[in-house]
Image (cartoon, rainbow, N blue to C red; front, side, top):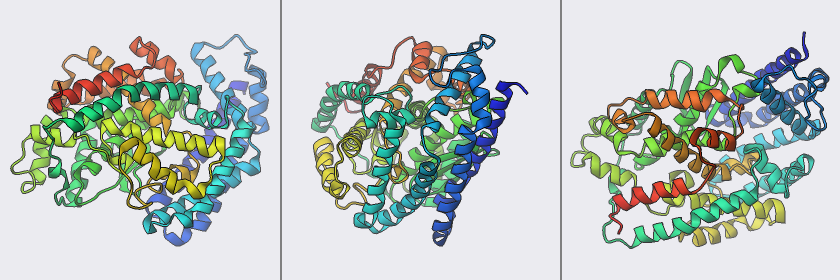
Length: 505
């Protein structure tokens, strides 16, 4: 067996373990009985330990060392083509990072992540930050320790950010955020000042959750989600996970008096799921069968949620179907009124329910807090007060309680520090990708109006999903769109769209 074959065999076996871990996590968030929490933490930690051993063990290490210098990443063979070379470079990158983490630390972190996530669910339900505080404090300390082991970038936070968005730095993120904020704040101010207001009350009537569910399933099928290799369930915080491209699972959250949350949340997670279902089966288990980065992954969810799901074309197709399910609630509403309502701009407490314009302010807030926690040792006990102050500064509103404030997001509970910036990066990626798709696919909006999303999905599959990690995120953007990653296309899009909706001068 060649060195390359040995490497791919070890990675495939590690991916099988990762699939088991993903299934345990999905079950924990959906159907696991509450009393099983401690046992589940042990199970997750055990599987994670096995997976780590596979990724740094002697079989993979020995084979990898025949092809590439483990210290420098310099190739020792000239027999690989460009795609195989990128594959090997990405395998080496993963090995270098995994091997920098002690095995005991990896299992301890996995165990605490499972316990901490369960604590977050209880704390959010009971509006009890004090209960959650020690779990989060320990998680912050463990993430700081992880950053020291990884030692990537100029700051501890950069090491964590790199786990989700390779080669991205907090300095780059700060620069992009500054560009966005310079144009976003005046745009939101202009919207607040106009006499013409968009009425969003139509979205807060009573809507049967079972009918909402059925409509969401219909829309998932319409955009191309394969229910034969995927499913949707309910959870406290919507998410998508995958054990394999043929087993992709999404969740959504439904509320009787909040139609928008379920509609857009379902499309958002559907975008993640389409990416997972579009990865190349023949590359499963190695970097060429994996998503490029979290920012690119999120770009797919934000594209389907916002650029498709909030478009006039989508609602030309979808509104009659929604109206048929909710005849009484939508009897006196037309698709134009509904489109304006679902695009209404108004600061909100909850990030996942924020409109397109104010959403990025939520991310900037979290980015600033994360850096303070990781780089500056900001006391976790003081987080609720800091959170509320930042909400007032960024959005002009203050949470009534911690459940709708500092406890609203699940990410920190399982250690996803450095994840939040990818949400705004994804907005930038998504607009640049969508602009290119519109150039490449004539009449795209008309296709949406007919309920035909196949051309867009095919374009995404060919240009993004099937690339795997064959390109870095910024390389992909430049090659695909001819432009480097920039805030300008995104802000141009927002200004054009909301100038029309709100009749701004």
